[in-house]
Length: 91
Image 1 (cartoon, helix red, strand yellow):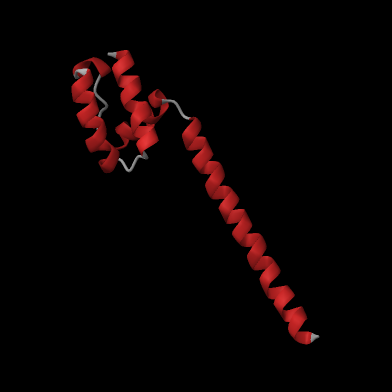
Image 2 (cartoon, helix red, strand yellow; image 1 turned 90 degrees about the vertical axis):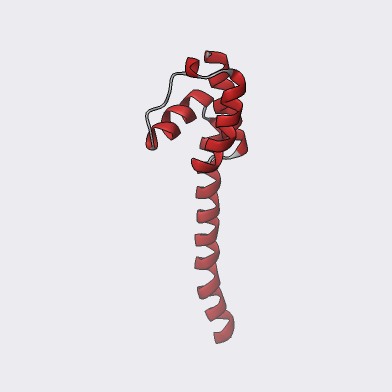
């Protein structure tokens, strides 16, 4: 009986903590998915340098820059796509 009580006391808090961590991660991921390309561009690019005007480069150049900066800025492919689409539309 004591063994079962110890398992319950040990595993229930661990299970609750794990579920809270998982839900926190998924909600921050969902918030990132809802951001527009303009928001991601405004928040991500200025962390390291002055963000250039969307008219500075052609659509083809933005595609290349988007691929390069995706890695450098640690963006997901979806985030990078949104940023490039925003820059192309604003061009």
